[in-house]
Length: 631
Ligand code: AMP
Image (cartoon, rainbow, N blue to C red):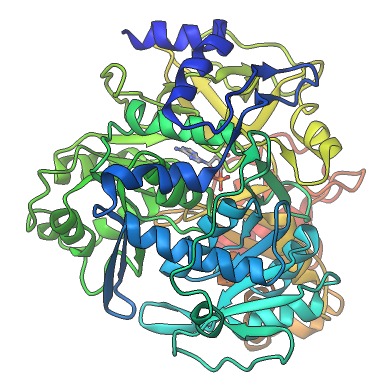
């Protein structure tokens, strides 16, 4: 079938299309209706269908694949590799599920997972969905304030964590940050289950904290049956940043998510059951949910979970894993490729990569030099794909599993089946149908299965944030700028809101501003994302002090800059740390008091700041310019 026909059917006859795709998974009770769109823009896919995500990811494969590798854990941080077959994964997940149940976790309860990239993190996710609990994984790089706000929103009954992670051989203790987060949070978990890796001290709070090993010992070899849930039952929430400081809990269903992921494994990733998939992401991000854990397992594949850096012990590590485990599809981020590009290219030719069909990259714009370099070095298709935490799976890419199409450098590709992608003028709401016009990338409903259901416990916020931002239109705004060329390929040109993307990590500038403002000497601050050769973007902060004399001499300014960075590290995590904190005496604002972030960003990137007729005091922008030019 041509991709055009496949795509057209998904848009024109979504129910028939997604009815067919739903055969990729097992239903305990078949659904009575494919889609209920009576509460638009909310979709309810597979109404009446009863199923279970863990059953489809593990149990259903046991008859054929019990001795086949399911989860391959590789840690170059602690020098260990462990392979779990489907039967072994089944056993481990049931043991974790039994532990959670014994702590009173049941259907609909939330379990927050704050873990490094260790097998127990995967067991915990799968155990939650097995018993109908809703997991909320928080990226291990986040610190106490970020974690506390997520605890308060998710209100987990239980938190699963560990003593520490490790990065580049350096231990990153988790337990202290977790204790501080629980102390800050209003909502207290009844239990904290801790995996002790023996990496760091793990002081236990009596009555609340339990060692996983002790609890698990009581449930060796147990059977825990799957809790059958409605297709619309939430499988997880995952927090993501937006314009306001408060992170949003992106809520995902069960049935629709499974169908979309299962379909993507063949259509987009060209994978077969029994093959090996390697996503270098982290379980704290949506790519980790969809393509380290659920997608590959739903498809009966082996999945590699990697703890470590791409260049340790050397820059050949990932390719050595491709050779060793015969990886069929690999998924990474442009920043990782840019890191590798700085290393000896010989690492790429040292290993047998003949199993690898393609390298998929996502999470941030893929610049042409990086794409060219890796395409040449690997001699494999490099497939960019654009999506968001909200979308659950790729929105723009090429579906080579349906019909092979060329990639275009700089473009993630064309709309994927189920996604009616359009461009609108930000201020008038007019639809832009001509080629090469810049507009806001938007999606017309009904959105396909697997798309977020709502914002956790806040339907209104879902509608007002995503569906009301383009004047006169009831469409989902991605908050990304884009253009479409004459061949229908899209190009993504950055965010329309105050979200920045550092090394593929999505961060809200407001969150960083709030954190910096908590420093007692800071009166006001603006944080913008500035283009960076390696990380795509970095955060840059311009702060006004309550008393400017505190940073009057360079040594004081430098010390204060370090102090402020430490505040961000401690509260949000090092991922959110600005590259620089510079001091000014006033910030560029409009006469009505709106911060001119885009003008600051332009000046930092050496671009023309554009129309400044509304600026209150041009001297403010001049200060930024002087600092930037002064280095
Ligand atoms: P996240 O929700 O963390 O996955 O971040 C989603 C955002 O990352 C999108 O809104 C885009 O701004 C950016 N993004 C993701 N993938 C791509 C891509 N392939 N090309 C350009 N930008 C991307």
